[in-house]
Image (cartoon, rainbow, N blue to C red; front, side, top):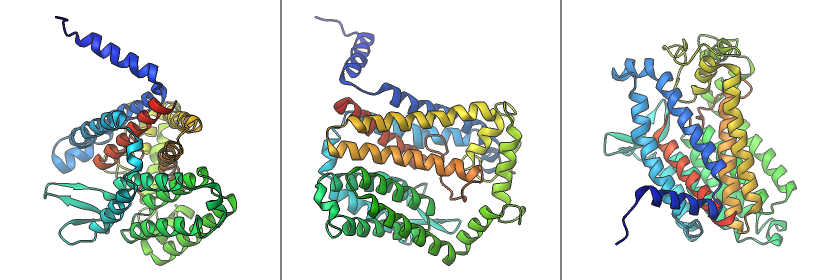
Length: 382
């Protein structure tokens, strides 16, 4: 009887994955960002954790329990789950996307935080952010729907552009009602990228771009909080103790880091000065503690993920796999760009988190699920 050897089985497993074409550089870069995120959260959340929960490492523990552990399970599941089966779930994915965004407005289920209907209550002790899940479910639907289109469909506005705008409008209107402008921007960017990759005409994309900017301008004008954020972006010095406080403290943190940083764990802004130090402001704490060179290295990792992801999309033979890959990479890249751009003062603050790095259980779970899909696609298509 052959003896069961754990080490040998693990070695054979990774040997088979290597032969199958799994892009270990892409997957490794993503998990490197996850590890970096845990290290930064363990430092950035010390003061806030002690102030709110009397536990300096509450955010680190919560990220592990509600984000990393379930996210790892989802990553492994989707790594071995044939991505092609997701194409058959396209219609249910659309219904799930709309249903989740409607749930946040139902009393007793939806949770209002800082005036935003962005969470649903889970059995009274935890919360879930549906918009994070919708990034993946809506992406799967769009990729499956567009993969079935032929080139002539995109030339005919009635067959391609109008249905695309209609479906996208339903999702963006629900997000605007929450309001969640940051997620709306990411989903629109993701949708336009796969529409173009599927064969959409550049002229149509220009129309959509101008229409989107006009819609965003209307949202800013109609909403006082969006107007305040936009005016703060244009003139951050006008009210440094009011609406301009967040961006001014963020820029102060980034500037304090210099070339080499204050040192890991030595941020001053995390001590009740900078809002959301483990959330959408985590890049500012990173720059303050690690400095320009190490922070630039993190940005380079995001660029590397984008390049490897687009390279994977280029070799995909299956249109669904190609569009799914383009969508996931656009999602990660644009979200990182919006977060970093806002903290650096070159874009308005939107509350968007830094992918794989910022605190947030739902975000981490869904991002790791998307990473698992990328691993499966690379295993089958490359």
